[in-house]
Image 1 (cartoon, rainbow, N blue to C red):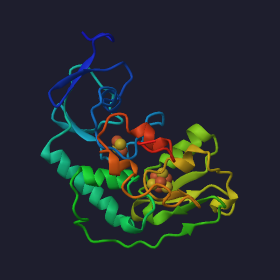
Image 2 (cartoon, rainbow, N blue to C red):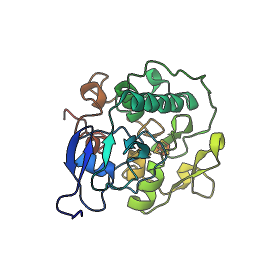
Image 3 (tube, rainbow, N blue to C red):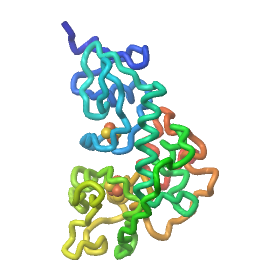
Image 4 (tube, rainbow, N blue to C red):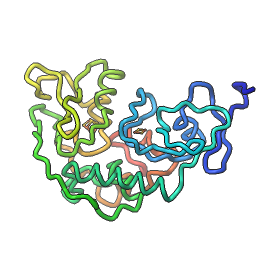
Length: 247
Ligand code: SF4
Ligand code: FES
């Protein structure tokens, strides 16, 4: 019979403790085990959409950011098969948008790019979609490039759960799914988002960007130039936009 003081799960042969209510992702993070993820951030409700955090739990695939840890679970996180699945998901995200890193200010600070490096992704593999979605540059300090949006809903949840503003939403299904702004005109400039909002800072890619702050950190000194995404404790650094790991 389990009790809350000695609950444990095993990830890749390593037994780690967990507390009641923690997901597998929570327990792994607390033990400094990296499970690749894009739509998850500690402190926001898990969303379970990107599927990058898929692990094998007692032989069955499951999303580690939404599945509660349960005593005795045997979990595989680091297998060639999982790496291949995660790489395919990442490749699909790249070809669905216009992720042309050499011309994107987020390069070196981008979680999608860092995950791709982590998974040894050398190309997009699938045919490129070249979408033409609308850029919204109507806000005086923030712009939105939907061609780089991976629909992770981090901005949606940050705005709703932390900023208390509900500025963003996703609408449409499948290939038509896209990010909208909840203002009368549908423009960012008519919303009450500000640069201090978590929603303005949390985007893991170069879709929501602060204007007039391009290339302040030189290439070579950016977060993922200096650190692997799998490094323990790195993620809170990403949330503090403008602060870099070597500051
Ligand atoms: S704009 Fe950024 S944070 Fe918002 S859904 Fe798209 S990728 Fe995620
Ligand atoms: S991080 Fe778990 S589904 Fe995206």
